[in-house]
Length: 322
Figure 1 (cartoon, rainbow, N blue to C red):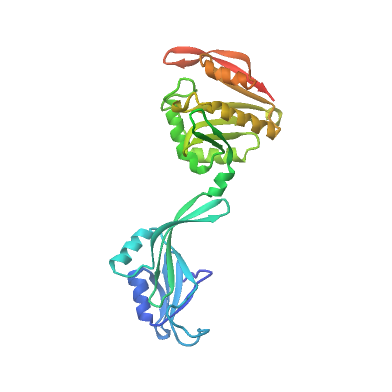
Figure 2: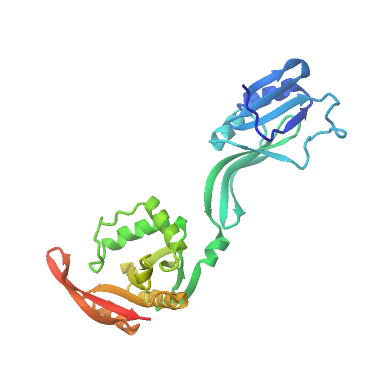
């Protein structure tokens, strides 16, 4: 039984044999069925279907002249646009618009296609498109920007919310900072997040009312990440924990202070979180001084909490009450 698509264009063609030769031998369409006496055929490529029939005076609404179908182009999905493109070029068939990658805005995302266009023997315009999936729209990325700072070294630090396209860079960032600082809870090769896991994490945190992540960006590179997290239980949802890291090459430029300022502002604006807690290595005097500058108070310690290659250090516990 032949299954027909819900929408199938039917093209009137000058010569059914010439059209069939083009669609079958050049474009790799297959004949689903045909009525030779009517000079008609239903052809398909993957999930796309087209009917072609030699002009007979029954379907024309006006005089047909080359190129047929003016003002219309038919988009046909393919798995490998470049493979089809090369096959057409080998047969010396003219390409109307050469292979290119295009991105089209659709709400908050960009839909990508690798595509090229040709004209069939009667001039119908055919666009063959390979799906490149989606990415965030630049205008949406702009809406994620929280603030910009001019740093001590003259560079511009952009603070913004993460988007799913950041996942790979975030994973690489965590792998880097884990190997260059003894002040974090993880060391080299101890960040086990994959890009797929990070994508889900970004989606979840961007939907949360009480948790958020802030990226510090310089020249399109992540140089700092901070995250504030709160539990979902209503009785304790007003409490939160904050974690912050900065790439070693960017230490002593005030980046940590910039991000902490923005995090505290977002918490105050949100109106839900009342307590911010953190833990810091006792020997990390610069970090402790920065936290105290923002009003954090020492409330206790975990003795010998850190073990850096056999050297133990305490964790200082600090709270900020909003």
